[in-house]
Length: 195
Image (cartoon, helix red, strand yellow):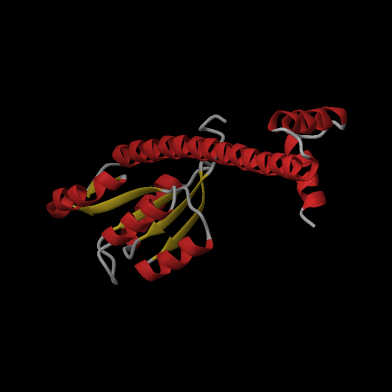
Protein backbone atom coordinates (compact mmCIF):
# COMPACT_ATOMS: atom_id res chain seq x y z
CA UNK A 1 0.00 0.00 0.00
CA UNK A 2 1.24 3.46 -0.88
CA UNK A 3 2.12 5.57 2.16
CA UNK A 4 -0.15 8.32 0.84
CA UNK A 5 -3.18 6.01 1.06
CA UNK A 6 -2.69 4.87 4.66
CA UNK A 7 -3.98 6.74 7.69
CA UNK A 8 -1.90 6.90 10.85
CA UNK A 9 -3.53 7.06 14.26
CA UNK A 10 -1.87 9.47 16.66
CA UNK A 11 -1.90 9.95 20.41
CA UNK A 12 -0.71 13.37 21.56
CA UNK A 13 0.44 13.56 25.18
CA UNK A 14 0.77 17.23 26.07
CA UNK A 15 -0.35 19.67 28.74
CA UNK A 16 0.29 22.78 26.61
CA UNK A 17 -2.68 24.17 24.69
CA UNK A 18 -0.35 26.32 22.57
CA UNK A 19 1.74 23.28 21.55
CA UNK A 20 -1.43 21.27 20.84
CA UNK A 21 -2.89 23.97 18.61
CA UNK A 22 0.36 24.31 16.65
CA UNK A 23 0.71 20.55 16.22
CA UNK A 24 -2.94 19.99 15.30
CA UNK A 25 -2.67 22.63 12.56
CA UNK A 26 0.08 20.46 11.00
CA UNK A 27 -1.75 17.15 11.52
CA UNK A 28 -5.15 18.18 10.19
CA UNK A 29 -5.26 16.27 6.94
CA UNK A 30 -6.48 12.90 5.75
CA UNK A 31 -3.18 11.13 6.50
CA UNK A 32 -3.42 11.46 10.29
CA UNK A 33 -6.58 10.19 11.92
CA UNK A 34 -7.89 9.56 14.38
CA UNK A 35 -5.98 11.96 16.59
CA UNK A 36 -6.51 11.53 20.33
CA UNK A 37 -5.14 13.93 22.90
CA UNK A 38 -4.44 13.52 26.61
CA UNK A 39 -2.74 15.89 29.02
CA UNK A 40 -0.89 13.58 31.43
CA UNK A 41 1.00 10.28 31.64
CA UNK A 42 -1.67 8.32 33.49
CA UNK A 43 -4.29 9.23 30.86
CA UNK A 44 -1.81 8.29 28.14
CA UNK A 45 -1.21 4.87 29.71
CA UNK A 46 -4.99 4.26 29.86
CA UNK A 47 -5.39 5.32 26.22
CA UNK A 48 -2.57 3.00 25.16
CA UNK A 49 -4.21 0.07 26.95
CA UNK A 50 -7.49 0.72 25.14
CA UNK A 51 -6.15 1.32 21.65
CA UNK A 52 -3.11 0.79 19.43
CA UNK A 53 -1.62 3.93 17.91
CA UNK A 54 0.74 4.24 14.97
CA UNK A 55 2.44 7.32 16.44
CA UNK A 56 2.71 8.67 19.99
CA UNK A 57 3.81 12.30 20.34
CA UNK A 58 4.99 13.37 23.80
CA UNK A 59 5.49 17.03 24.71
CA UNK A 60 7.72 16.95 27.81
CA UNK A 61 7.62 17.76 30.62
CA UNK A 62 4.18 16.61 31.71
CA UNK A 63 2.43 17.35 35.01
CA UNK A 64 2.77 13.86 36.53
CA UNK A 65 6.23 12.86 35.14
CA UNK A 66 8.71 14.11 32.61
CA UNK A 67 7.73 11.65 29.86
CA UNK A 68 10.87 9.61 29.16
CA UNK A 69 9.58 6.52 30.97
CA UNK A 70 6.37 6.62 28.94
CA UNK A 71 8.37 6.96 25.72
CA UNK A 72 10.55 3.98 26.63
CA UNK A 73 7.53 1.88 27.66
CA UNK A 74 5.74 2.61 24.38
CA UNK A 75 8.84 1.58 22.40
CA UNK A 76 9.30 -1.56 24.45
CA UNK A 77 5.69 -2.76 24.53
CA UNK A 78 4.21 -1.58 21.22
CA UNK A 79 5.19 -1.03 17.62
CA UNK A 80 4.18 2.64 17.72
CA UNK A 81 6.59 5.29 16.53
CA UNK A 82 7.44 7.74 19.31
CA UNK A 83 8.30 11.41 18.88
CA UNK A 84 9.30 13.37 21.97
CA UNK A 85 9.53 17.16 22.11
CA UNK A 86 11.83 18.61 24.79
CA UNK A 87 13.31 22.01 25.60
CA UNK A 88 16.62 22.68 23.90
CA UNK A 89 18.52 22.91 27.21
CA UNK A 90 17.74 19.24 28.07
CA UNK A 91 17.72 17.88 24.52
CA UNK A 92 21.12 16.14 24.58
CA UNK A 93 20.52 14.49 27.98
CA UNK A 94 17.07 13.19 26.98
CA UNK A 95 18.18 12.14 23.49
CA UNK A 96 21.11 10.17 24.94
CA UNK A 97 18.68 8.33 27.22
CA UNK A 98 15.94 7.48 24.68
CA UNK A 99 17.37 7.42 21.16
CA UNK A 100 18.83 3.93 21.57
CA UNK A 101 15.29 2.63 22.14
CA UNK A 102 13.92 4.20 18.96
CA UNK A 103 12.48 7.46 20.31
CA UNK A 104 12.81 10.38 17.91
CA UNK A 105 13.71 13.39 20.06
CA UNK A 106 13.05 16.92 18.79
CA UNK A 107 14.33 20.09 20.40
CA UNK A 108 11.86 22.94 21.02
CA UNK A 109 11.47 25.43 19.49
CA UNK A 110 11.36 23.74 16.11
CA UNK A 111 10.04 24.33 12.60
CA UNK A 112 7.03 22.98 10.76
CA UNK A 113 9.39 21.40 8.23
CA UNK A 114 11.24 19.49 10.96
CA UNK A 115 7.95 18.20 12.36
CA UNK A 116 6.55 17.14 8.97
CA UNK A 117 9.83 15.42 8.02
CA UNK A 118 9.93 13.66 11.39
CA UNK A 119 6.33 12.49 10.97
CA UNK A 120 7.14 11.17 7.49
CA UNK A 121 10.11 9.29 8.97
CA UNK A 122 7.92 7.76 11.70
CA UNK A 123 5.30 6.74 9.12
CA UNK A 124 7.95 5.02 7.00
CA UNK A 125 9.34 3.28 10.07
CA UNK A 126 5.83 2.21 11.08
CA UNK A 127 5.32 0.63 7.65
CA UNK A 128 8.59 -1.26 7.98
CA UNK A 129 7.53 -2.56 11.39
CA UNK A 130 4.11 -3.50 10.02
CA UNK A 131 5.75 -5.64 7.30
CA UNK A 132 8.02 -7.29 9.86
CA UNK A 133 4.99 -8.07 12.05
CA UNK A 134 3.26 -9.69 9.08
CA UNK A 135 6.35 -11.82 8.31
CA UNK A 136 6.61 -12.85 11.95
CA UNK A 137 2.94 -13.82 12.04
CA UNK A 138 3.38 -15.84 8.84
CA UNK A 139 6.39 -17.67 10.24
CA UNK A 140 4.56 -18.38 13.50
CA UNK A 141 1.57 -19.75 11.55
CA UNK A 142 3.86 -22.00 9.50
CA UNK A 143 5.62 -23.28 12.64
CA UNK A 144 2.25 -23.95 14.25
CA UNK A 145 1.16 -25.90 11.17
CA UNK A 146 4.37 -27.97 11.27
CA UNK A 147 3.76 -28.80 14.97
CA UNK A 148 0.18 -29.89 14.26
CA UNK A 149 1.16 -32.02 11.25
CA UNK A 150 3.98 -33.63 13.25
CA UNK A 151 1.59 -34.39 16.10
CA UNK A 152 -0.79 -36.05 13.63
CA UNK A 153 2.08 -38.05 12.09
CA UNK A 154 3.11 -39.37 15.50
CA UNK A 155 -0.48 -40.37 16.23
CA UNK A 156 -0.58 -42.30 12.95
CA UNK A 157 2.73 -43.95 13.81
CA UNK A 158 1.45 -44.84 17.26
CA UNK A 159 -2.10 -45.89 16.37
CA UNK A 160 -1.75 -47.39 12.88
CA UNK A 161 1.91 -48.46 13.04
CA UNK A 162 2.84 -46.28 10.04
CA UNK A 163 6.44 -45.33 9.43
CA UNK A 164 7.11 -41.60 9.52
CA UNK A 165 7.36 -41.56 5.73
CA UNK A 166 4.02 -43.41 5.39
CA UNK A 167 2.34 -41.03 7.85
CA UNK A 168 3.66 -38.05 5.91
CA UNK A 169 2.43 -39.47 2.58
CA UNK A 170 -0.95 -40.36 4.13
CA UNK A 171 -1.50 -36.77 5.29
CA UNK A 172 -0.34 -35.28 1.97
CA UNK A 173 -2.52 -37.65 -0.12
CA UNK A 174 -5.60 -37.09 2.01
CA UNK A 175 -5.09 -33.32 1.77
CA UNK A 176 -4.83 -33.50 -2.03
CA UNK A 177 -7.74 -35.94 -2.44
CA UNK A 178 -10.05 -33.84 -0.29
CA UNK A 179 -8.78 -30.41 -1.41
CA UNK A 180 -7.85 -29.53 2.15
CA UNK A 181 -4.75 -28.14 3.74
CA UNK A 182 -2.35 -30.53 5.47
CA UNK A 183 -3.13 -28.68 8.67
CA UNK A 184 -6.88 -29.36 8.37
CA UNK A 185 -6.23 -33.06 7.70
CA UNK A 186 -3.82 -33.19 10.65
CA UNK A 187 -6.42 -31.57 12.91
CA UNK A 188 -8.97 -34.23 11.87
CA UNK A 189 -6.48 -36.99 12.66
CA UNK A 190 -5.72 -35.44 16.05
CA UNK A 191 -9.44 -35.13 16.80
CA UNK A 192 -9.97 -38.78 15.81
CA UNK A 193 -7.18 -40.30 17.88
CA UNK A 194 -7.10 -37.94 20.87
CA UNK A 195 -10.45 -39.07 22.25
